Image (cartoon, rainbow, N blue to C red; front, top):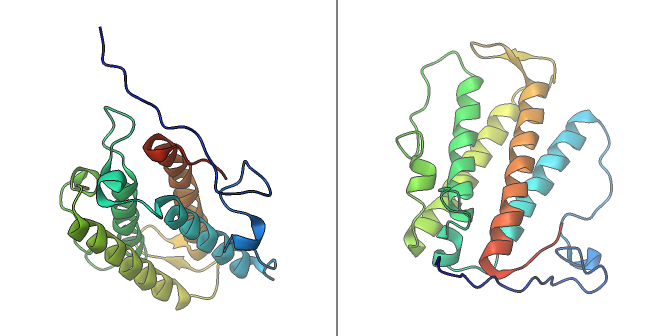
Length: 187
């Protein structure tokens, strides 16, 4: 007979709307709607980045590295490392030059190397912040959303939308991963 695993009780920190991650007054994603297409795209990206961080808050290295849905290698820490790698790769799309090297080596190094070590956690967060800032700066140099960049001539608009899509998809994964770790749920 297979081993039974104890599932954490589902819970939310929110009190106003119990299906939310945080009460509206405590949610850093709440604010006025931006004006203009680029500001709107950047606001959505910022909010998904915040959502990923919020889903990881309060967890230790073991919890962040926990592969909650076997046999998948996906973990919250792996998502942080993967998105750092992806930010770097987006800069490669923007240039005609030789690509920047991978941060984590082989194609699955971002997830495979996500181990329960505080130094790995700190490096992952630092890499994500560094790579996000570098990609943001590279895109800021191209204010025209219709401008086409790199060998594949991708538009700035398409690149921004793709970044939003990537974070949104992985925030969905983070929802499920976090619930498996400690039962916390919410949007």
